[in-house]
Image (cartoon, rainbow over all chains, first blue to last red; front, side, top):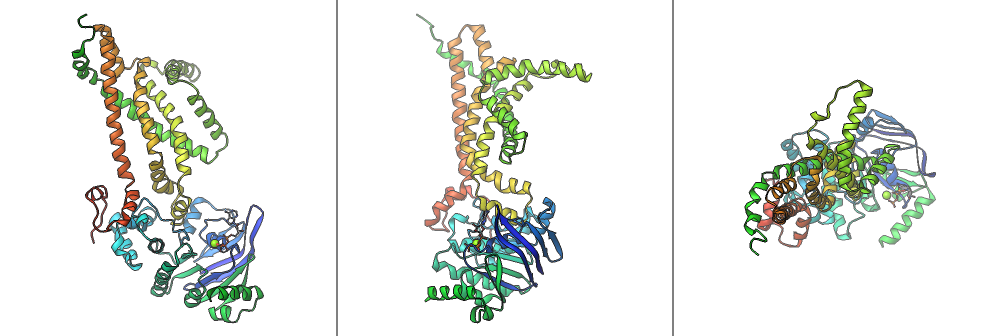
Length: 249
Length: 260
Ligand SMILES: Nc1ncnc2c1ncn2[C@@H]1O[C@H](COP(=O)(O)OP(=O)(O)OP(=O)(O)O)[C@@H](O)[C@H]1O
Ligand SMILES: [Mg+2]
């Protein structure tokens, strides 16, 4: 369960969102959509404490953090409840695929190298990259890199998976591959809470159990994919969807 | 005009000189290691703009860069005894300068010198580390120290290696100044031999050959180290080539393989 209460965040006096309230149940797959610059990434990064909110509170599975003060130890403890997949992959370039995926298991979870490798290999198989296990990120295509990013996030075994535009840095022909992987991951573990930011609206419509439309620091629409995509109430949402549909055709 | 230069002596005295090679290497290695560790701390102080400390570091670095190493050696050599006398006087302690080996003065001076120079290189190298990778490490739940140890240092090291390698070679040659603290290294021994035989030119020529040889060997070791550390880069270059048929060289460098 994730709960935000009165969450506020600004960057040097530029208010990104204010007094945001949201509750997400375990196992929900949230599609977070909205125009560029709306603050979607900032919101997601707050959940992982890569950004520190100004005020309000954040709860993930019973652990509550009242912004903004937090000790380094508590920050890490809170952060370990979610894992993150980045738009630019952010793989460790000096480590091979196996090293990338086992890194957190060894350094953060304290597993022995052999135990960590066993778990890592399972996750790498899950994203169908078992043949590339000894390669370095520089040897992979963008789509393969992102699948490593997903395996690395999954390896930590957190209940919450956060994906920030996982396919928008990819060439069009590679997008489908990564979306399929994400689809598999969601299907394989129905207890995992997933929040995914994406401009791939048809994909969101297909996999999300709930869609949030975020703009100007507010959640303007919140409902099932068919509610939001087929019967939007808010004018801004309607406009946004129309623009996207026009582009798709 | 016989024996203006004793060519044989140039080579026959090399083994005698090499008895003091361990001293030279020891001063070089320890000063470099301490210099790297302290340099890293100085770099972190500067990067985090820690108040007061970062100003102190700036002054220290400026001082070291602005004064000759030989002057720094003399300052340590004469300064520490005075400092100890003050300490004894005010704290009632009984430290004796004689208990400190001459080597310690030399190590201290060279370490501080290396620390100052390395701190600038290390700082630049740390700034070059990809922010995205640091965020990824953080998001996995690593502590600051773990991020530093697992991502920042290994990545910055590869960037800084060429500069640090040059610093190492420079240091190795600078240790020839150790005689000012009456430590007998290669050069000091060369001077002693020359003093006995009056063959100064031969002695310095022998020394030149030894230092040159040391530098060439060090350069080769550094080249190998760099190759070893940048496997990930060369692996990418081979991407176009057949993935599964890695060249013998590549197989040699990629050690950590997992067979499934
Ligand atoms: N570190 C930062 N410092 C200052 N301003 C920032 C920072 N990060 C984001 N912003 C600003 O916050 C606003 C929201 O950015 P954010 O990246 O969260 O938007 P987004 O909804 O993810 O957009 P996009 O779809 O383009 O990724 C933007 O105006 C951006 O310029
Ligand atoms: Mg974004």
